[in-house]
Length: 515
Image (cartoon, rainbow, N blue to C red; front, side, top):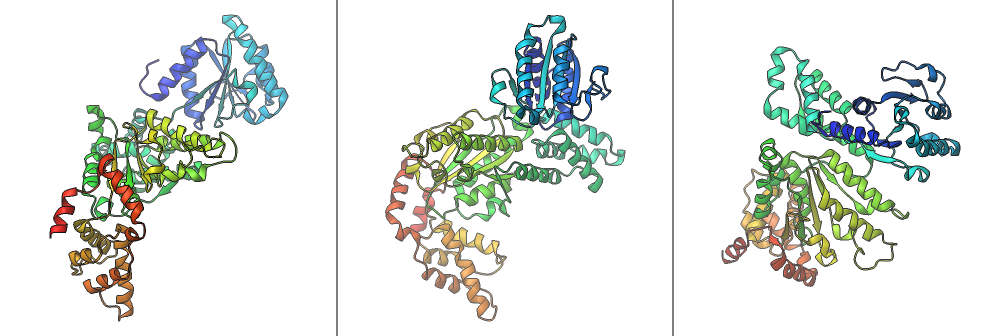
């Protein structure tokens, strides 16, 4: 069997397990048709015949033709008896048997098969494969079953699907659909979907627009996220990085890594960026960066709320987090946003009385960060670095740790311009530096809020356009958080000066104070 993609590799592994006389394989998948096709390849390679069963059709061959011994074997007990009594070298592929495993007699019969089948002569070797979307293996079978989480189609398989869809196009639009840049974007958009979902998206796009629309394909991923219920889909920030004032160092670093997700970068061997940790003063744009980078990179934005995944049952919280991270890998390439990560991991290293839930959550996150294989760019934010476990901060977990300080004069002026633009006021004449001088020690959020405050004043004064004076007056009514929480902010700054990279050019702060 030629191994050219993840599906073929999984089939080759299953073929090896069959040759090694493993009696029970538990395959987790929602792609029945694709996996059955690959299982047929695996069975043929291992020189096994194949039999299929479900509660509707009984026992049949791959084409669905009923076999004589199983015409009436729609009962799971009957198929277990048929496997037990058969003398033919065959692999028995059972669809959706898991609901019947709650019946003690069915579970016992399958367990007995798992014990006795390896004792059969080689020419009568039999194996049982359960196809199911469930990963919950009953305790009675856990010691006998080899569990395989069958991978979704990779880029090579998606590429073949796209070629099939393009091949069905009229000649006059084949060239447009086969454009290299559109092709790569269309493949990226479909990675993470099942074969059936990706094929349906391509066909729908061709029917509606007579070409492949990567954006239309990507919207299908939102349905995947909604179905799994462990991650939250966020709409990216309109305008991308250009809608954020200041943070020039951080934005430059992010722009330089956009190309790492391209086909040229993969061919070059460039590793995918892992992500960044943004530590700093609340309200200075950390969360906005996560939303903006997804826009700039044209990737889905997913938010992981680990607090919402906590459960009172031991081990379930960790399982939920692992599932969420797996879903993120499935949807990759994407941006994964962990907001205020210190709160989600509170108590992980301080002996919290939560039965070890926080420590388990930390372990799940750290293991995934170390071993992940998908193109998931993580943006984690934190307002209190003292609450972060040291294991999270070591080199290799993130590509870079940035400290986001209060904006300097130059940054404050940029924030005012960006806020005016977001409210459709980019054409009015405002002295941004005068507003910046009036908003010293303000956070980015406090500065951006000056624009809607001024708009209320202008609207109530005859719906006139706002002026620099309106913004300065609005600033004069604000007591900045930096004054109310000065001790905490100074501690953050002391940490950031020596342990993180400044998100803005430090020299700009010196120049702005001198101007």
